Image 1 (spheres, rainbow, N blue to C red):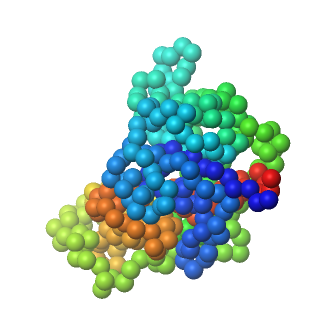
Image 2: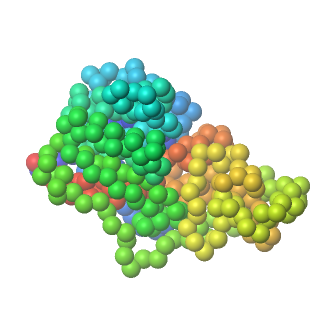
Image 3: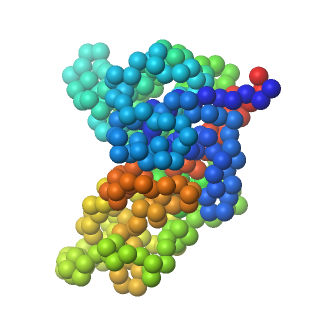
Length: 327
């Protein structure tokens, strides 16, 4: 009998991690097969972003504060997923040291650990920014791993780059995978860079300029201001993108992008503009039929914080190959 793995999703956002875990979508002409998975629970605290999730998934995502979520209210599941917030971890002046003690967002990691301890799924997948490896002078990440291990899991982690998996974006993220079973842990291998395939350039996912609404272009005043700066010929990573390469990392603040920020922008035919929400969705590897149903600002925030679905699809594929699909 083919086994279906039930997934509980924490910090679900607009569903990039969940879409990748489930599969069954297309991106840039490639079909990502449906996995033997079913999302049975999803939650996030941001109602506007949850609304985008619920416009795209059959499973209903709850608006909830994870601190108030009782483990008993979460259905049984085999896999727990989540990109826990990590804006700050404090391990200073704590004895014994515990990350997140002085900051509410830093404490959310412990809520994920609490649910793992109580529910004991077969495996989990956590995702975070690469900077977490060096947070608190390198002290935070080893503590995170030890906390996962204290919940009963054998843990592996690796930095993966979205551009290595057919995604038109240079986005490095840490994936942490844990198993209750030591043999499964030893067997698991993170997905490798796709071979025989060149990186996908951002030019593959941007729209024709004659179709772009004028509101996405920067004003002459903004461009003149840029040209007056001493850095006009050495734009930092956030400014004009080379369209024959993958895009630099898109973030949650693209609605506030300027020519002096670190967020990526386009320069085509001597005109500067921001990416449209649909272009950002493609840069993040969301399929064309993924609905962007909120305001421009909320769509940017949701997409910028999302896990690229194609990236998560490859991680899930490796995870399921390890767990096996037969009862």
